[in-house]
Image 1 (cartoon, rainbow, N blue to C red):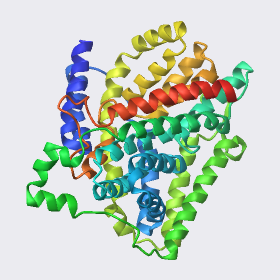
Image 2 (tube, helix red, strand yellow):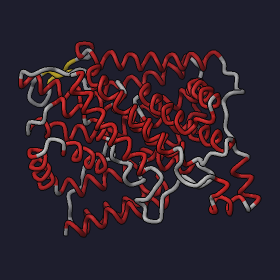
Image 3 (tube, rainbow, N blue to C red):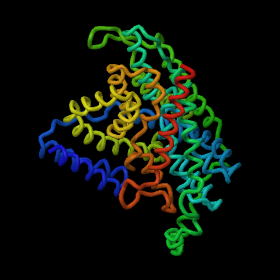
Image 4 (cartoon, rainbow, N blue to C red):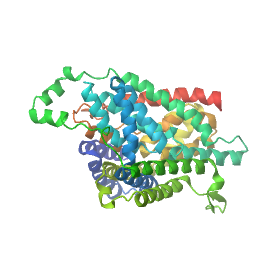
Length: 450
């Protein structure tokens, strides 16, 4: 019965990838209905925390984009990329990684996709090369960001464990001393590998057949995107600085628990307010301040690309994660027992377990929240856990994540794609390189600096 249920889940994922993020969320409903009404599995909990965090960030980023603030940041990034177009395959992923580091979410990458594709096309570079690695690089930057849920969650869990066990406390800055160089090296190696991937456009028969159609050729080559010629009003710069100030405030609150109000938990112990909630609140307030100070026309906010892509992201995560939670929640005891035995015998397998769980929950923050307590409970060294934090990014294995689906949609040439067998998609190898190199460098760095 378990295997039949797993086939239902995989079948919905495979079918859903053919219809994009929205279709993926809808088709996951079939899986839920079959699992609950057919196999009588108890419905899992929808990923509300993840969805609300995405919603808050997307809401703020959408207002920021409508005010012109996001375009100010993108314009600065575009200046760098267009100044060195021959290095687009290397510079683009480093740029998206850094943007995520600043903002704490990989969803800021959406605005960069059409710019990266335009630069690549004008230089005759196969768009798949910079675009695919840029998409996974944006997600890899999550564990390098001081304001991401994954980083804050890991720091909080390690701090709580240290207090109970009387061991060393590892703060967010110490975690970043490992995660930033680890993910940076992973992105850099993946970018270098991508330089020669696939056929050049002039030698790609599929692309040449596509542009043989005048209508398709016009569609591909006439839709270039650029911000360089745009003159932004001063309110756009105000919006940018408001956003950066909010990010700085998130960092400070994450670093100093005493700045957050404390409330009793289920056991009656006082605990600082969750950083997940802090990020949501501050993003909502930042969006409101930008809206008021910059006189944003709110009726136009839902028409921004960030808002549209973000809503698709929320919907796809909603359906897929709920279906996966229903299946794996029904069998979690067996899974935990197997994972615990494996990690007890070989500590390095913690990275593999974290990687697999990340794919199951489609969230780095949720993966850390699920696996870090187990690792600490069975005696995994916190230094080892910090070194392997790059393994929290495993949801590129199947091309179902919203940013990857958006990347495919933005590539008008069709070179960034999902293969015939689903698993052979454009993001699989860059993702594996980033995680592998990140874990290797991270484990070495952790032993040196912690």
